[in-house]
Length: 243
Image: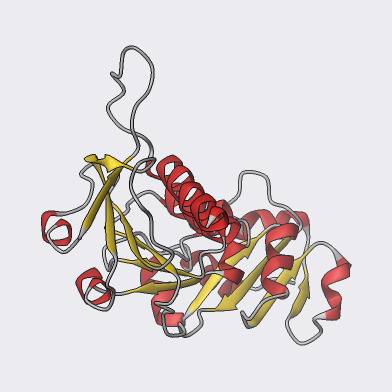
């Protein structure tokens, strides 16, 4: 049976303050939990209505659907909820293309970008210290288990940019990504949803790229940052294949 203390502790992990204190985060749903169980992440507890998870003997607690609904943040809980330990981040590999995010606020956007990094083989994702927490439950759900294959580092972006010869950013008035020569290595920066890349970070970038608008009107103000990430990463990877 789920205790009140267990329930209270799990619910507290929806807040960054308590995730940081406990160094734990919550994962929900059969598919996503299985992704983390097959990864480097350390399982702490697993609560499930499904006895197939009973193989994790020391961590497993069989609970009812009613108990699961009390600790779940999902509208429709999906059989299992687990807590995992937040890992230490390995060193960044600057011999590949590194994606960096400058103060992203939206959990859904960050989760989607983590999944895009996984899809396009980006090993390192660097987030500014003000970017939304990657272990926010909404980020974890949107990433659908891709945390398991992407190294996510929170640090000051100016420190990261100083370590790379190729520093690239996305802007509305940059050079067309379809015409610019794109490197295989470097740090590629995407900006905040409302304000783009901050002035101090922009001043450190050597190359400014844009995704050109097409069609007769060209009135659309901007692209969603996750949509822009998909287009940009696809173009970088397409060029690397063609070389």
